Structure formats: C-alpha cells, structure tokens
Length: 208
Image 1 (cartoon, rainbow, N blue to C red):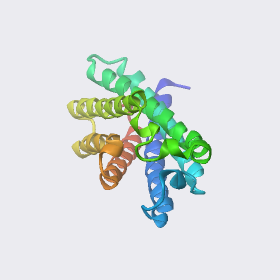
Image 2 (spheres, rainbow, N blue to C red):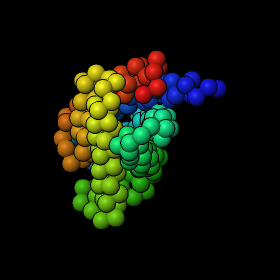
Image 3 (cartoon, one colour):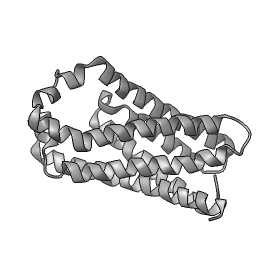
Image 4 (tube, helix red, strand yellow):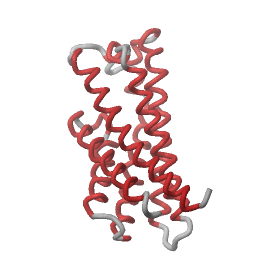
C-alpha cells in the first residue's frame, strides 16, 4: 500500500475514533442517569450496560492512538519539532487513557463484586498516592499533547481555525477527569470528538 493511502486510512481511523468517543460517552450517560446519584460507585459499575458501553470507549481510544501514529509518521518527515512533540505527548496520554479504560471496563466490575470498599469515596482507590499520580500524569500528557498539536495545526494554516480550537478546548476539558463537573467533561468529549471527526474527514484528501 502506498504511503499516501496509509496516511489517508489513518485519518479515517482518527475520525472514527472521534465518533466512537461521542457514542461511548452519551451511551454511558443514558445508562447511568436513570439510577440517579444516590447509588454507590460499585453499584454504578455493576449496571448491565457498563462493560459493553465501555468496550466502545476502549476501542475509540485504541483507534485514536493508531490515527495519531499516522500523524506522527507524517511529522517525522517535516522540519520543526512542535508537531512531532505534540504527536508523541498526545499518544502517550492516549495510551495511558487506554490503560485506564481497560481497567474501568474489565477490572472495576470485579472490584465492585469482590472488594466494593476499595471503590467507595474515600476508599483506597481514590486516596492512594501512586494511583492518583497516574491519573494526573495521564491528564497532563493528554491535554498537553493535544494543545501542542492544535498550536502546530494553527501555525500550518492547513485547517479552519475553528477545528484547531475545538481540538484544543475539547481535549483540555475532557482531560480534567473527575476534577471538573460532568457537564464540563461532556462538553469536552463532544468538542474533541467533533474535531477528530472533522480532522479525519478533511484528511482523506490530504496528508496533514
């Protein structure tokens, strides 16, 4: 397969990851909201739709990492380090997020059944320093990488400015995790997913 064709496929993968991110988040909200906020965290994890819906999020994360690797390969051929650095940092953040997504999808339901006390507010899972440090590092890498990518794309002037701003703001809001309200993170997912879809669609006819 020609290099240009591979890069265009990577853009399609990037756009698909954005679509799946939005579907995952909206389905998760629709599944958890009917039970209200009075349930324990373990009870929410044991909701019947938890695993299949989070599998969608896991697949979206894997596709995002693959799509960004195509952008990384393209930037390796170009002068300057901002785009290359942004791709490296964002991929690192996405990989860590994928690890978290795997944990949430398959490990948390086991904990909810056999050790629910670990998952309660104030429990070890939310107070352990090393565990929380990984969350923090993931958020910083995820947000920082996409900020660098957005700035790089703005400098290239190869896409509409709105696309880069959606990418930047969406990634930062989504990477806030539990530090920001759910509504704010929802806005972040929608903006990030929309920007990835837009980027992917535009990239089918170019290699940027």
